[in-house]
Length: 433
Image (cartoon, rainbow, N blue to C red):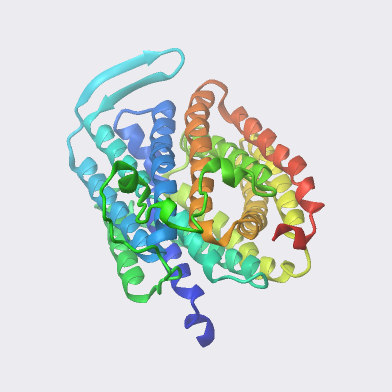
């Protein structure tokens, strides 16, 4: 245990855990905030899509920057942006509701756009723009992992994410029931972001010390946005980090396809389930928090001990295939719209996601050029963000029209991953390097 606490893996797991706990604090109450501020399913989907839309811009830049100037300072910048976003969340909660205009449409429903809603949109945009911490943390983990421990390390990373999601929703349910209401969870989330900055600054060693010299002889827009500190024509080994060149790497096209489809399928769940829980199941924020806590607890077990046991015995390709199949079945089960069915779906979803996503990320890291880890993870993050933009908006619109049947759409997408994953199963481990 002491050796683990002193390992290079432990600090990045702590950073990921703290960040996820702060993020998940808001999930059980966000749909209720949107409704209180005049929004509906469509607005909830739009608000959810704002984060990935701006992350689509920020993640590749932060990922490329981390390749050149180091992971540590990029993680600090990301957490600082998250902290400022939570401050804006507090401002939104303290503002009086002033409806600027109302919409009554057969396509997007009835809603009012209020001043607190606008501030929430700005907060999510800022958090998304600086939200490259996930891709940079994955690149950091890839830096310090070997072929022997890569799958186990990504399993531990996924477990730290799930642990954060266990405490976050549970705390949100408890804190929102106090006299401070929804304000207290947001204050705690801001404090957690500050704690994450401290942990990164104090305990996280740099994993990419050979960053490019930061001296900039000529200021240009290209250098500003690409953080390009050396001219490529002066370098003999300048890496090609364009998306086209990355997609030409062996197996990358199918991996980016899975990345996109997975996020697209889950977006229909994320857009529909909170509204589904608050309206059809008539759950409170505390009940939604319990559901998410149970889900995360199951994922911790499967991403940690179970995946560690399966790692040397089952290939990543098989785990992706079986995991995506279980997730698709969970979406189908959820359409029965009863508490028993929803919790049964929760078990399938948590087991499937617990074994699938860490295994997929391990494959993704194996096939990445080490000199482009941050860039590739950033492009992957942006691929997921692009899928989430469409999925969250479309999911919100579809749920307002067809209700829980929207989960069938997510199921079909996850089943397509199952079919595509057959190609991963047929690839020998040595071919992935």
